[in-house]
Amino acid sequence: WQTETGAIMVSNYAGMDIRPGSMGRPLPGVEAALLARGPDGELAPISGTDVEGELALRPGWPSMFRGYLHDPDRYGRCFTGGWYRTGDLVRRDPDGNLTFLGRADDKAIIKGKKYHLLELEEAVAADGRAGRVLIEVRYGDAAEAQTLVVNYDGPQAAAAVAGQRTLRPAT
Image 1 (cartoon, rainbow, N blue to C red):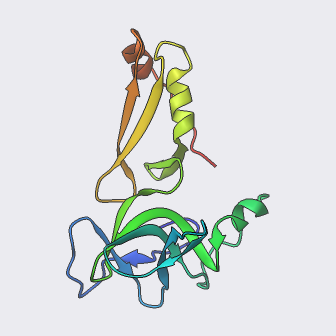
Image 2: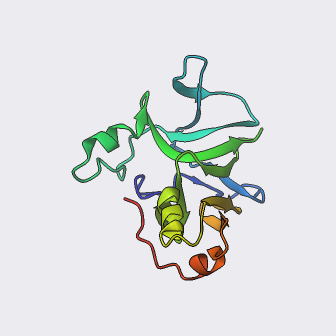
């Protein structure tokens, strides 16, 4: 499920052999592609199996979002060559099943909300005790972050990380 799609587009459905870690396949009637940068630097659909790319969907279903409030440029950046770019990086296996690999942007989805990794890093480093900070996202079998690994240095870094406040989701 993605808010912008308004529906489930990829799933394990009745009659399918469920593969551990797989998101499933596009539902009947949903046209999906994997996009990758070609030699010209442009994103384009790629064919084949055992390939990785950004999951893209052909728009046209009734619940598809029609824009971001007061931000038409952001809406325009969600599309390439007539495909809606989900921001999810996936692998397609020989049977057409998709496995989530991560995100194409610098956001992590935590408990259903998107957070900019830079914002998280800045929050940890804000009081000066953590020194340098790098946050790594590790995913499990779903598109939601399973683990955030906070890498930091500095003599009082552990105290800085332990006392962090709640952060606001990204817009």
